[in-house]
Length: 478
Image 1 (cartoon, rainbow, N blue to C red):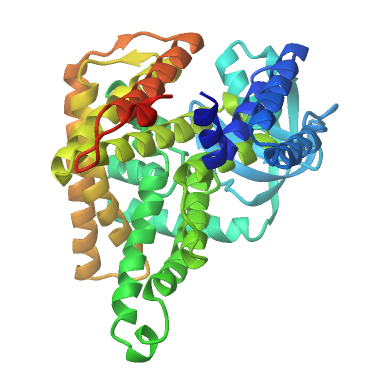
Image 2: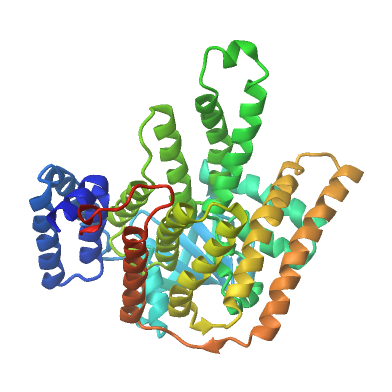
């Protein structure tokens, strides 16, 4: 047992850092700090070199969250618009010098965009007064402790570079609005560009089929952008003899592909799944450049720990939980499946099935929906989205600066056809799925995921690997 924990601590030190911060985050009672202290001591016992890492993260956690909750927020003043969504009313997130506010406004302020500097007057209330406790927790997870109803609001300036990237996204959305059907436009704005303004108008069918996760910009999108430009630059550099004889093409292609990935990340906004996937791509590039051994788990736990350092209530945010949990299981399942399954198509099919199974508890917890067609929906929708809709959508983005003409028209017709097929399939499955209302408790979800982890690790330990030597008692003992 000691040998097992020694190897885990050595290979995945940030796993224990994350567990340490997680215990603090789930509660602010003395008990939670005591548990975290014992986790710290327990881990330090196995490898005292980790003590410095723990101290660094814990001090950062305390300092960054010391004054997170404002003592007073004024209902008037100047602030920067950080997000805008359209529901029954206009929902605007504004950051002032003192705090962040969630404001409800009438439709006459629909010209407000991300990056605008506004003067406002509003009646503020504490989020604890909201009847919807889940929504109150969501606002707290974004460091928003007050909400209000706008009396007056006026745009007085622009915040750069936030406003610049928002204008680029608005230009792309303008082309989508002009050339694409309304439902396709809303879908691509949300799923590709990260604009949640009109997500509420189309998300019902995705929730019914439990495929709503594709509507958040994540690793699938970042991976495609990076991979697309990586192959493009690798192909171009391979034609230049002076370059490929003197330099490592993988490193050059990775650095070159990182720049358009950074641009795409800036356009899509700084939402948690996008931030997580972007920084995983960044660390991957650094590890490739400096020839370091890549550890996807350590990168993931490190980023999760950084998120918790900046916001101790991030664990209440559905985007944080779904993004990191699903990424962890994606890494776990894909690595274990690769040991036993060599056929690429079979591996992808099993991976998609298992990821659908893993997504059910967390989807039930946040959306209170369960459907017997969840597996079928994900088996069809995820490959269709990744291999058809995403490439066509980026083709449409690249066509934005083209002059009006037949080429541009046909490109957007192709985009509308591909995205329209996916939306029709989701709508068809949603119409026959008849989801039931069922919400799992937090404890039950935690137990289920603990079982999943234990199951995959046990299978990995007990089953012999193909073309490997016989596993001795010493090897399988843990």
